[in-house]
Image (cartoon, rainbow, N blue to C red; front, side, top):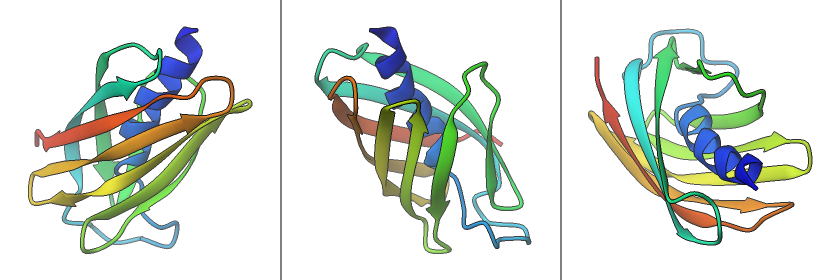
Length: 123
């Protein structure tokens, strides 16, 4: 089922850079990011790459999927987030530092998958 695979991948892109809701000022992580998502366990698709735009500390996912995003990046770059779509959910942890980031993700719900993500700032 590709929905779960896409959820895991989109979770990482949309959430890996989502800041606290109260963030109103420019964030050092603002800009364009390319996020690679790799599945290590489970039957989700092997890999994805997504573009994420962060403005004023808030992440924006430009893809056609519809996800509920709840996550944050601390001022120190710590990433903690989740994304859901229907009964499917993915949890994301990791960190950003300078122009790169890395972490792990796992899904729950209809299909169990997990893996890692890498992020690279593109502008």
